Length: 275
Image (tube, rainbow, N blue to C red; front, top):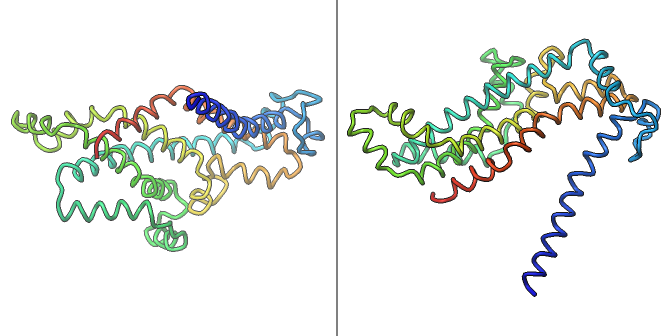
């Protein structure tokens, strides 16, 4: 009886969760396929004239390649930021886990503070202006790294806690220095949790709207998410073009989720064994 009740409750939860995520996606797909007149009604209705491909082509031609530039900016931002998070997060987590002490304890407090303390926009802009990185891609990359690094460090540290210390000791006995121990012994072992970090942070940085809006203003440096806002302000009544563009923006994270959702769960579970 209890098992049946649990199955029923779980099934209902899955149905409601599916509706919660599927209905907005269908709404976007339907409006992206409608003509201009019908899309202005913003109704959940089947398109009278199915023109999804025409809307996508018109959206890109209307922006004078600005969407292409924005997509390239988003790819550069995501790749560089996530690569730095992986290497820096893994190294900091390794030292934090393997060499406990006052210094590493202070580092741990800073990492936890990075997760708890909310970001201060105005002081951050002032600092970027003083160092000459405001309205630049390197400045935004540093912001993304700073915001995402605490989570990466904690995830790597939880996984490293499950790695036997005998591996470090054996490599040290063989004559490896600390850098060789990390890159040749520990870093290859972090593959599962590394994939999780890459996928989660890539989706977060790619979909980030707030940081590019504040720290990288301007149409030429805009990322794909900020460009959607500019697109809507310029074509306030052409919702079919706006939703067609949104549909294209959703494709990369959606594809990553389809192919790597099991690896995300596996990486999160692997880091929860110890620590």
